[in-house]
Length: 83
Image (cartoon, rainbow, N blue to C red):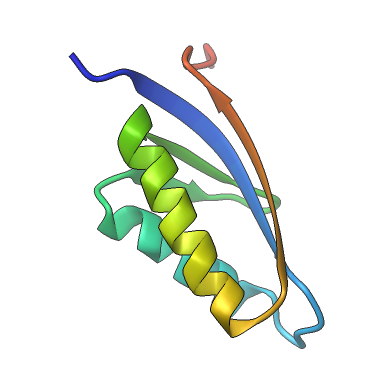
């Protein structure tokens, strides 16, 4: 059985007039890889198979980094926080 993980991802585009479009593109890329990604005001929550998550984040980061300079913060847990 695949290991399911949850992650908090924050992408910070640098030196751009509008932050939201590159972040939305990043989140869509995660969703297109089959992950559950929910954009929040300061970060995006992502859930899915661990291997798929890491591959998708790497792919989405590479795509974002081709467009502009970016900073990515990623926090991953194998236990979904109780809400």
